[in-house]
Image 1: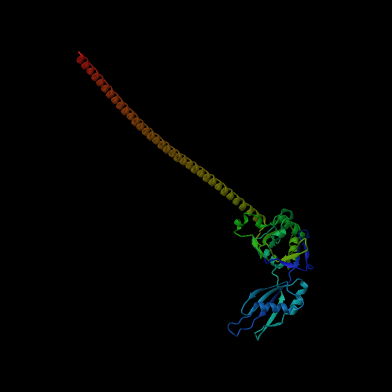
Image 2: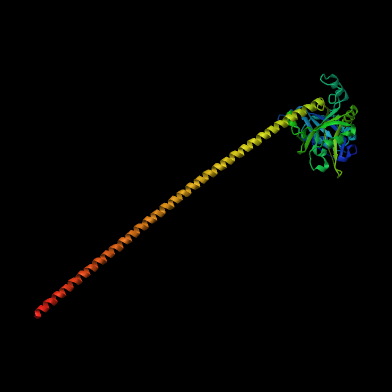
Length: 385
């Protein structure tokens, strides 16, 4: 879906659900085709931007609220133009359709054709013929008859519960908005189901220009009259949001009747069974993850314990090595002390022996002196006689 655009004039908007600021605004688009001349000079080209500016200049008293190129070929350029109000479309068509453009540098004139935009919206004949001809539909059963609207491109934020603080769409708000047309039997917002993408292989989250999240929804009416009123009200309309500040923006939404039995009892039951299977698979995966996590934790615990034991063993060996080294050091010191003591004792013994020898020599000398004295005395005493 296209991006939301600012709405300056809300006079043509009709109420959808004012408590949520939601309105419907007529689609005011036109298709403009500009026929291009055959380019005679090689390398020369026509500027799409210049053509667009010339178109803007042709509607003198008004201006487009949006103008974009939808297709560009060698033969023509097709534009989609949008104006503020439905009443302006005729005035714009009168200024554009059948007129011509003269571009600077080109001798040929460019013819302009403009027409009101053809809205792609299913008619009553479309759904009546579809359900009449479908062989696998039972129009007595809900969801297998024209009772369900399929909406795409709804802005999430516009359908969020105000007090929730979330920007996720709410089924409660969806019911509040669309029960305006009749009693609702069922609704479904696929993006709210966490298993839906896995069940269908589709992505239900879509982004518009600017990154705003859009969603798709199914609204099933209990009575055919509600479906008819809703389709009639939505035909040719944009969805408009008007804030508390009075500022309004609008966006295009795609509306179609559901042809897939999306909200039939059989489809709902099938999705419930698939969801149950996926939940069981998820539980099994979670259980497997839990067991794997526990196994990893046990393995890590065992590895930590093994590392602790190895570290303790290394520490024990280191301490044992240090103890043996200290023991050897003590033994070396003891041996050195013992040798030193032995040397000291030997030295003292030597000194003592030397002292004894000297004393013995002194004693011997003294004895000899004494003997000499006695001998001399004896000789002297004999000499006196």
